Image 1: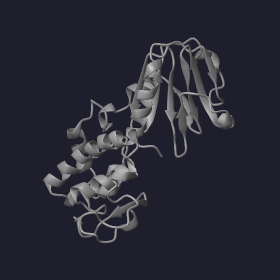
Image 2: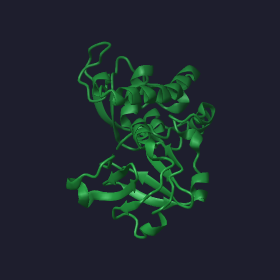
Image 3: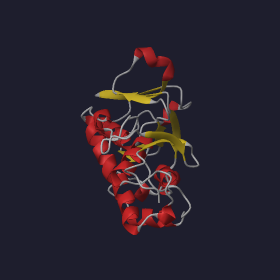
Length: 244
């Protein structure tokens, strides 16, 4: 599943269509396409792993799920997987194998935009309060909780925990105050590094523990284990990541 930084990069690619009018609608996700045609795309907003296309009278939520993708041109070989295609005067945006849903302004108003780790509205103080309200939660689950760290996925989880030297099965209540601060800060810091490396096509070259064999610090074998209530795969070094 694409993580927050990838979705922000998608937004940047689509941004050129903001202010343009939809001249044609394709795809099988929306039955009544008449409400979208002729609408002007006013804004594109992202929240974690979700994208919102904001028009005057309608809003569209795009979630790429596990295998979704987008393109700035129509892929003929993916025609059967086209969920939504919006054509503008200067080109189009096409979304494949994803979830597309119409949402109203009331729905958008209930989103906690301050929980998005890549947003200018990110609120670290609020994140800390949420974490402390779940003292028995493992840090591996906490980082994947989209209500706390919207946009963080398994790559960011593993790499951020390695950076701060914390074992994924550590409990929130056992983390020293400094480590809790580092956890919150690194979820955001690594997300921006992720975006930079992804854009430069060197993300995998910068992995320290994710799908790696040996620790870059001590050389020990990287442990691969399903952790937390979500049973998501964690990669960690038992020497350099302390269990709290």
